[in-house]
Image 1 (cartoon, helix red, strand yellow):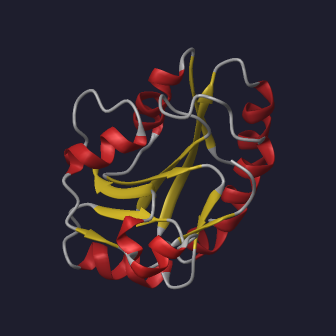
Image 2 (tube, one colour):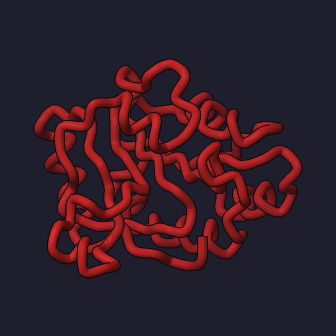
Length: 173
């Protein structure tokens, strides 16, 4: 089971995602919660965002706060309870086949797997693995020290594969 961290912002994208994006990402993860793939959810954001605190509280999930965008990921990692993590940028939701693919991935022993967005250009249609990475699944033991944002986390984890299930946008981010 995965502990899921939703990054409402991070060092690379310091502007807050809209609150609607976070709410939609949370809503899209309900089937994974019901299926037992997701264990717990944490919304990681800036300390001053009281609306995000309320959204997390209403959704029944945890919240992690930092005073600066550089600390958002670290706060989320500290709040997550499980040994396997799903780190996902707000505004994106897993697409078709995600639950099954994560189950297979975890049964195969895990490692680290990238989650890319759906193809959104001719280039990404022709070369799907050139699509942006907006999520990663990894064991806590593969979190590299000093990973301050999603890109650095993914690079340090040494992913072994990219899941075929793509992330779809669920709002403006």
